[in-house]
Each structure stands twice: as structure tokens, then as C-alpha cells.
Image 1 (cartoon, one colour):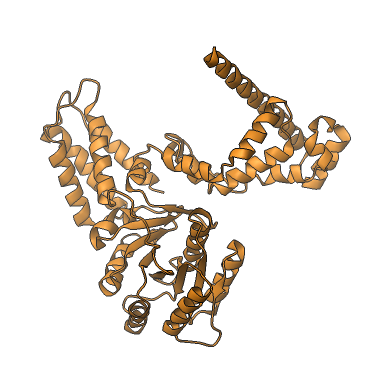
Image 2 (cartoon, helix red, strand yellow):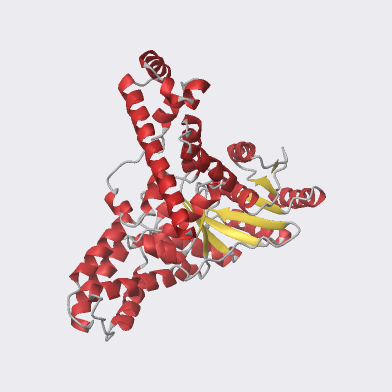
Length: 439
């Protein structure tokens, strides 16, 4: 995500030379390259031109502190303007209502159905809401089945009406169902439609006018680049939606949609999708995205994801086990599951400053833990609890059962033992530090 744009901007800043001041001469070549980088990222030409003119106006004549290079000051100005371009600050979804109704709109294949499931899962697990998913795509039976499957996966009910081809009536009936059964959020998944399809556009306009949703979201595939922006404008002209959802930001996207869409439709980007898993949904924060574009990472989002999986009681239990050198493979497996729940591994790595760039050409398989899990699952309960009993014959049996080699089993056991020693050492040092503080 944004890797090429980030690299191009970094090269642009290196062009900037000069001491003590940013001048029209030493900034011209830099901003010319910045504009090219934005255009290559599929940012609208007028937006790229306005952006560089604004940066130039803010940069010219600024005194550069002794400890700061002109290029560093330019990075700060570009960062702030990127954040402003994408909206400046995050905008929350409106879930006030009894029930709150959220209407999904967008092109076919943009990821509406998957996102509907992700949003329901997020509202259920993070906002303690009781959502109801509604299947209003009456033209594609696979969409109804897909929503049913997602609903089962996240344990959220799905409202459907077999044989009813009137999405307006289905939506109305679903809202009545939600009221009678105390669901506090209704998420309506609609059929994908082209903005040029007058009949389909009239249909979704009729749904909106009839049900009066608290929130209408336009879901767009970010990999479609500038076309996504044009489509968003056409949909907004008809629907006057409340916010944008950018899906597939984990793909090979140039990022133009994220940078341009806010300026064109004057509506906030509210969420981004970064993978297929139900957890792969993030609130959109313009400043954090600007950080990531400029290679500064996104530690705040990384910490937030970690905190979502953090269980204080479990942490205390583990700390006691580590201190007594009783950390075992059951605990190790539990930690792996928590990491996996945090999301796509490469996406997580990109949130650490400098790491995203270092791993640009490195493939990080989301199944990277599969071999480790297979080995642990091939152990008996006694072996997981007490790894010291793993002799040669047991290791051979585990290798055979997990489809790995004896060398891989040995390597994991060594890594586990090294990890256990390191964790115990850290815990002991923390104890000494606390003792010293009391004195």
C-alpha cells in the first residue's frame, strides 16, 4: 500500500538542497518531482497541482532551524498537507437510532457484502452492539448466500426474504424485524450497480428515501484508482452519501483514490479494508495514513490492534508462569493466535517505522505460522505442558504427524527454549527494577 508513492516522495525530498532557508529556486525541482509522484499514484491532476502549489506557498521563506535540514522541514509540510488532503481528522460512523440503519452502496465487485460482515463484526465486538445484516441484493443469489455464510462466521443474524424481488420492501420489513427483536443496528447490503444504469440508481435512491438511514456508505475498490473517484462523484450526486469505504488497500494499489476522493466528493473516508478476514477493517485516520505514506510507520494503530487482543488477566497469568519458567507450548500457541487476530502480517510490519520499506520485496506469507502450529498440534498434551520430555523418538513422531522434518522440529524447540529464557530474563529484570524503585 502506497509503497511506490512513498519511495518517490522520499527521493523528491533528497533533491532539496540549501542552508537556512527554503527558496523558490531550491524548492522548484523538489515539488516538480512531488507532483510527478502524485500523478503516477493516479491522483487527479488538478488535485496534484493544487497540492504542490499549497506546499510551495507554505514552504517558501520558512526559516530552517539549525538542527533541521530543509528536506526535513519539507517532509513536515508535505505530511501535514497530505493529512489535510485526506480529510484532516477521522469521522465516526453515525450509529445513533433505534435501530440505527446503515445503507451500503457501490459498484458490483467493490466488496460491499464482505465489508457489511466486517462492519457488523466490528460493531458487535468493539461497540457492544447487536447488529442485523440484511440481504437486499435480489439479483445475485450468490450475494445472499455469501452474506449468510459471513453471518454464520461472525455469529450475526441475516435477514432474507426468499422470492421477494423488491429490495425496498425487504429493507422496510428488516427494520421492523429489528425493532421487534431489539437489534440496535441494521446493515443493509444492496446490489452492485453502475452509475450509468438509471433503473438501478433509481432503485437505491428509492431505498434510501424510504428507510431514511442514519448512514449511507459508498464502498469502493481502491485498486480502481482514478475511476473510483469518478464513480464516487456520480454516486454522491445521486445519493448524497455520508462517507466512503476504501476496500482492498492491502493490494497493489497506487493510492490515488485515497488521496483524491475526499477533495472531489467532499465526504470523509470512514473505513478502510485491508484483507479478507473479518478483523481486517480499520477506521480511517488521515494523519496516520500520511505517516505510512512517508515511511514513518503507524505505531498508534499497531498498539491499538494489540490492545484489542490484550487480556489483562491472561497477561498476569502468563507473567507468573514465565517467572517460574513454566511457559509452555499451550501458552506459545495462544500468543500465535493473538498475533494472527491482529491482521495481515505484512500490513502489521508496515506499521513499524522503517520496517515497511525494508520488507518491500519480501513476501510475508499469512500462513507463516502454519508449520509451527502443525508441530505443536502434533504433540500430546503432556508434551506441550512439559517440553523437556521430548526425546528423539517423540520428535520423530511429531515430525511425521505434522508433515515436517526432524530438523524443523528441533529448530522450533530451540527457538522456543531461547524465547522462554529471554522472557524469563526480562521478567526478572522488571522485578529488580520495581524492587529498586521501592528502595
